[in-house]
Image 1 (tube, rainbow, N blue to C red):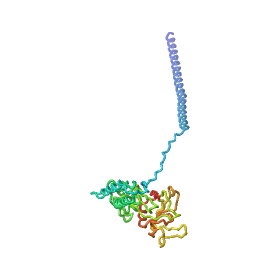
Image 2 (cartoon, rainbow, N blue to C red; image 1 turned 90 degrees about the vertical axis):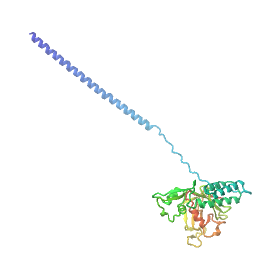
Image 3 (cartoon, rainbow, N blue to C red; image 1 turned 180 degrees about the horizontal axis):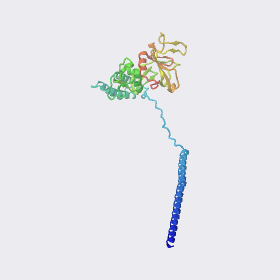
Image 4 (spheres, one colour; image 1 turned 60 degrees about the vertical axis):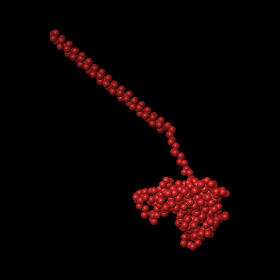
Length: 347
């Protein structure tokens, strides 16, 4: 009987332990599920909050006023100006000018000749007051020097206006001229290249740093040629007759306005001329101009051109155009750059 009671007690104890194990397991499972559910629940809320926060940030950035960075103002390129004009000659020679002329002469005659130093010194002297004789002497000396430093293949040390250029494959005289702001014709002339297509890669040529400009004096029928601000030489010209005067002011060589003996129609008689006509009035070259400022502003139909009639040079007899001897017109044509070179007309 005692053994039976002990066995019964043991079975009850086992069942009790089993119930406690089951209850503990249920409690553990319940807690685990609760934690899992709570994590999912609260984790989802945190994710949604984070997403909402991110969306708010994007919205705030989107709705925030845009920061506009102003583009740099493109300043207009200033129009180049020629040297100062001294209109009224002095009654007596300027002693300082005489000294500068003597110094330049010594530089030219020295061994070796200091061509560029003499050129620059004489060019600066042109802005000083002097009499007509002194001005004529200086311009003659500068014109003679230009035959050496400009119109030859020679390149002198410390010359800022001319330099050497090594041709690379694909180079054309036209592209080299455009880069240096001069027409290709003058590069062909100074380098003695007979045809543009004969330019060869690897060879070294002389280049000129342009552009060229001219100033026309109506009172003296003269045209002064400058490379940048350096005087090169003077030409005799013909200008507009009374009632058809050549307008003063600043002009620019028109793009597409340089032509060789173009067909021309007289605006008065409406007669059309070609280069083959014996009375063709335009000579060998036509350089169309467009007015920039002064009386010239907005004016069209004016040009620098040659003439077959030498008697038209040195007088006021044209319809307003500027006439040159044909040989001079060809040279000026090879120097003035379309869209860059300026023509200043003064009294």
